[in-house]
Amino acid sequence: MSPSSRNLLLSNAATLAAAMLLHWNVGWLLWPYWIQNVVIGWYARRRMLALDRFSTQGFTSNNQPVPEDEQGKRSTANFFTVHYGFFHLGYLAFLCSEHGVSGLRDALVLAACGVSFVLSQRETFAAQHAADLRGKPNLGTMMFTPYLRVVPMHLAIVIGSGMTGWAALWLFTGLKTLSDLLMDRVDRHMAERSADKAALPTSTPI
Image 1 (tube, rainbow, N blue to C red):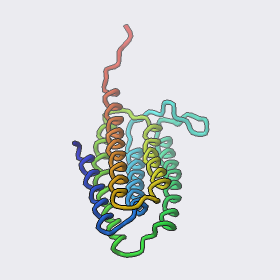
Image 2: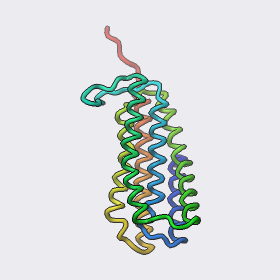
Image 3: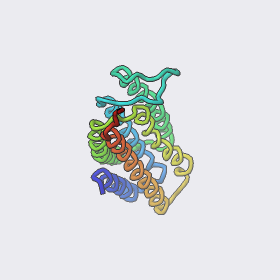
Image 4: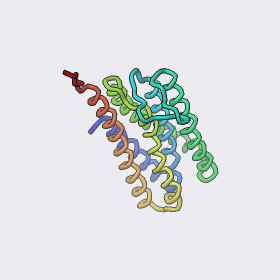
């Protein structure tokens, strides 16, 4: 098991323990997972800006190919920040209206959850960045991958808030953990595959 996967298991287990100890309902679990998505977005932007070599094959903006240069990289990272941030501002407004943080204790627990997610994502970022330096990853694919985390959040808002009881907490956290582990594996696999592809020798015409 990779260090990032192990940290994801530990952070989700800690979140579940806090939810049971503090008698959170399932809807309240959306807070730590919103924090986690923000952490993922922050590291995604950092990863894009850290690229030395990258491809923009098939990636367009305003019907124009995105250039494979510093300007193309920074404009993509900035667009991602605004767009991804807009999504999560909407979620934040929902959480504040439906599941507001009412006390210092809950705020401190959420902060601790955030720290655990940062430690987990830092391990994933380190593995991805090392692979990025060896390869030539696609900038468009890199930008869109974090949005896959938005889908579980959408589903959580639709079905999670109405669930009650400890069984619901276990079910919701279990499904979210499986999603986290799968996406973490996909993220690292994509980076490694790009690096391996770039390392293959190119044939020369005779």
